[in-house]
Amino acid sequence: MIESAQTMHLARFPRVKLCHAPTPLEFMPNLTKALGGPQLWIKRDDCTGVAMGGNKNRKLEYLMGEALAQGATHIVTQGAVQSNHVRQTAAVCAKLGLKCTVALEHRVDTNSVEYLDGGNVLLDHLLGINIEYRAGGTDMQAAIEDIGAKLTAGGEKTYLIPGGGSNPVGALGYVHVALELLAQANEIGLRIDRLVHATGSAGTQAGLVAGFEALNAGIRVLGIGVRNPKDRQEATVHKLAEATAARLGVASIRREAVEANCDYVGAGYGQPTPGMVEAVTMFARTEAIFLDPVYSGKGAAGLIDLIRKGYFTAEENVVFLHTGGQVGLFAYRDALVPTG
Ligand SMILES: *Cc1c(COP(=O)(O)O)cnc(C)c1O
Image (cartoon, rainbow, N blue to C red; front, side, top):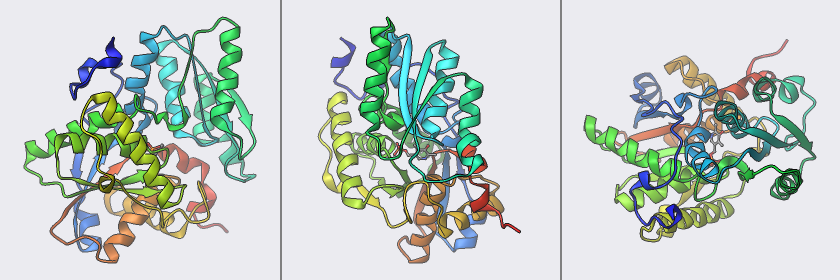
């Protein structure tokens, strides 16, 4: 069985090639100058292709590999109303000819028409998936299990993807990125000291940490939280990194290898903060790179604030992993542009 593959040899796991990859690793000279160091690089996982890109496409390569290996006909997943994960899953289903049903949680309390119907939701509709809405605070995993059970009873071969695609299969997508990034850095002679990115459902960080630990890369990963408090976020990432390492058959993950800073969440998931608005504006005006309001904007707000607090030395090479999500900008116009 493929599941018993005990190796960092990722090609032993089923995968559907979906992403435009390797994604670029670029220096950000203007932002580096504006902030007075460290040396700031960016890994452009906003450019993974399919349906305007983002980090979920990485996970979906392995999740869809497993779904197709199991003969799935119908994919079921969930997220917040403006979920990038749902949009990317819907797109991949369209591409692979699979049916798709999603549950969207009203996790952000708002009446904004742009939030409720624009941005990712607009694209979800164009992609032609079935959408079911749930109230904020619903147990969304239970919700998709319910939906899945009904579809199975109706004769569908369903495959459930947890929120954010974050399980040991999806996390393989970011083990893959750990290998890809290290190869790029070695090729251009770049010593990466730190990698910083937004962390939510934890699959991105878990995969990166599992990959870097197995490779003994010496690259410290810092996740900037967008939802949960630090203790909980680190525990979730560590648990998933361990499960991912077990799947790969590599050594277990040091607890110290998992670092999250959750000081930049603000009032809650998907709630704008002044730091997010500053980060989105600053990246746009210095490097012409668009971040997003829910994830990468808060991740970059953390990065910028930590730079100002002297957390990094000027000589350090810090890579910001751009996880995508720009479609969400169109759902947050009110927070991003001056009104009146
Ligand atoms: C989902 C998402 C993240 C968080 O990744 P996780 O693997 O869920 O931690 C970061 N940025 C964007 C744009 C996302 O859509």
